[in-house]
Image 1 (cartoon, rainbow, N blue to C red):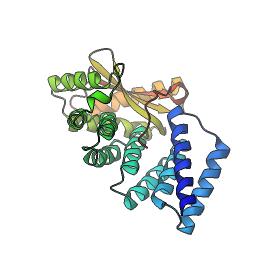
Image 2: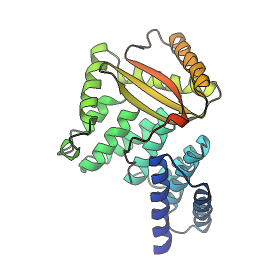
Image 3: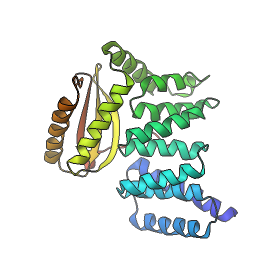
Image 4: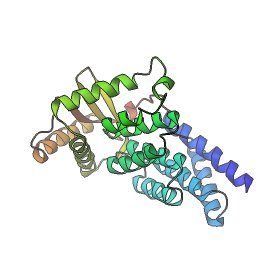
Length: 261
């Protein structure tokens, strides 16, 4: 079984690299998919890793339903594996699935307390679904902060963001409800979210970017629908603190933060 295990690790590294760099080789992706599915049919190697590889392939191809199904298959086989859970959390966050992202991020965080490196990755995943306080709690792991480089602004952003939202009384449940509603509105317009991330915008606000395969003018229409929908659904949507905006996928630039392997 050594060969299949080595193959799945190589495939996973390849598809993760494609995801991080926002690039892809269609021929190579199809070949990896065929070989991973062949291993699953033979019940050889590590099926949970094959499912994880297939989840990345579905993500790269923009197939939301398949990505979710493959992630769920992988986690069902290995729900205490940090590789599976860390990647599942990141994929669901990037796919604009905050409820699933939070689920896997919390499971990942629960297994990361003894490892500062994993704790940082878990905190980033929690931050991605606006669970700032939980992210800070995870970062309290011994020596976690010391592993971040001097130019990594994550700790500063995390601390400032917590202060910002706590001062305004915008709790985690409301933040997640706003995010869930925004992503639902985007999909209701017929757009599929291909990437998603929160970005600190100036010093006193946050912008949650949702990337779709649409033109700038279409994104403007979707942004209007988001703003209108949130005003209708919430007594107070706090646009002065956080805004949810659609952007063309073509404008997405990788940030260089690796996904947990």
